[in-house]
Length: 162
Image (cartoon, rainbow, N blue to C red; front, side, top):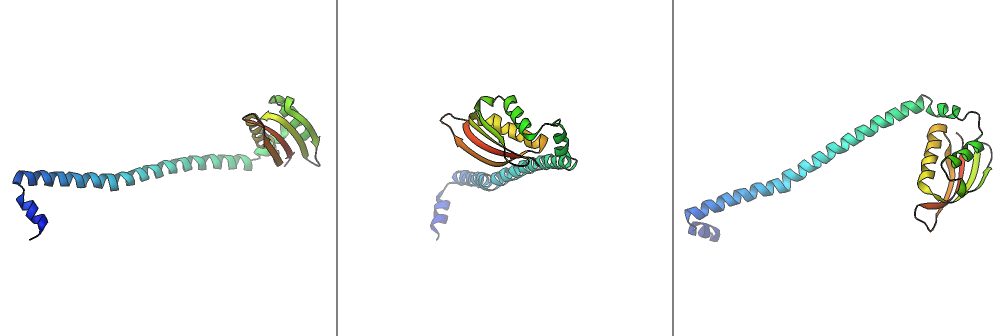
C-alpha cells in the first residue's frame, strides 16, 4: 500500500478536513500569487503604457500639423529683420549668460560660432530649444566640457539657420 495513503488513513476525520481545507486554500493562494496577480499587473502596465503612447501620439500629431502649417517660417518672421548674429547675441544677453560669452563671430553663410565659458547648462539648453522652435535655428556643431562646478560647462557652438 502507498505510504501517503497509509499516512492519510491514519489521520482522524477532523484532521483530514483541516488538511483538505488548508490544501485548497494554499492552492488558491498560489494560483492567485503565481498566475492571476502577475497577469493582472502586466495587463495594467500595458494599459498605462498604451495611454502614455496615445497621449504622445496626440502631441506628435499636433506638432506635425503645426510644423506642416509653417510653424518655423512664422517664427522666422519674429526676428524683425535681425541677422542671425544679432539674434544669437541678444538671446545670450536675454538669458543672462553674457558674462560667460567669450567669442561670437560669423562662421559662413547662415552660421554663427560662439564660445561660452563657465555657464549653467540648463538655461543654455532651454534657449537652444527655443531658438529651434521659434526660428528654426539649430546646433550644427557642439563641443562641451564640464567645469569643476556641477551644472556648468565650457561650450563651443556653431548655430545655423534653416
